[in-house]
Image (tube, rainbow, N blue to C red; front, side):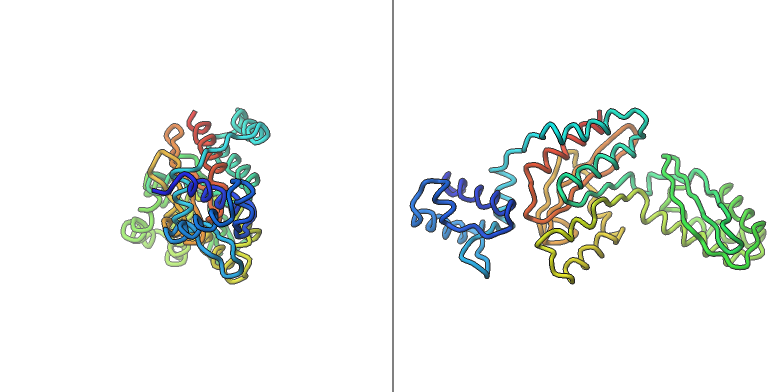
Length: 328
């Protein structure tokens, strides 16, 4: 356990570093804590030896380590009260009676992204819980259709499919078979059902069955993998000094675009949880703050992703507020 003075120093280092992204020197801490520079330097050396802060290569200042952030979140942080302005922006969404619950969640997390300059992720019910209600197709021209998939939870996805030299009659026949045989199937079971149960039937009734089967199989697999994933403010990473190197930025954006990877952000705990650096499954230079939500028969995860130098006190408060309002 660290001393009261060391706690005060660590809290200041974390909060100043979050604000400025610049290493903190002893001079600034002396002025705030009214201690001699020798005292502060000794305490900083001890905090460094204990692994709570670390030296940067570029200056004599210190920055928090992952362990330091963890100690701050668990022991020193006070959740920030929301400003009236922030609350007002969110209340206009929560009081809008014309919005469906899914739209309320998306719009409120969109506002959080704008307020914080971090990235928001919403993971709705997984595709296990989404069952197929209907497939519709709209012809665009003689070689292209839009396939529309509707789930029993009202989730709608659409995808353009290229089908050169396939008659509309054949397409309609295939869609009819799919609707008759697949309704009520969980999205993530459709692929195997298509292959083992539907394919032999389609081949009996549809001449160009191979092209149509492959096209619909690919569409369903795409639907299943991105079912109910919403990523908001992805480009906010471009504004962070931690990701100012092109290669690092590209790597982070690629990770966020990988739906299978993003699925790991899912949270089973009802409390707001903070995963710092190596504690999360996405990237060791980021923090993920997230919680599970339940609204009627909908459940999922809302998460904020930012640098380890994140405004923890503010984001935890905002997520708690959104969760309470969604569940109300």
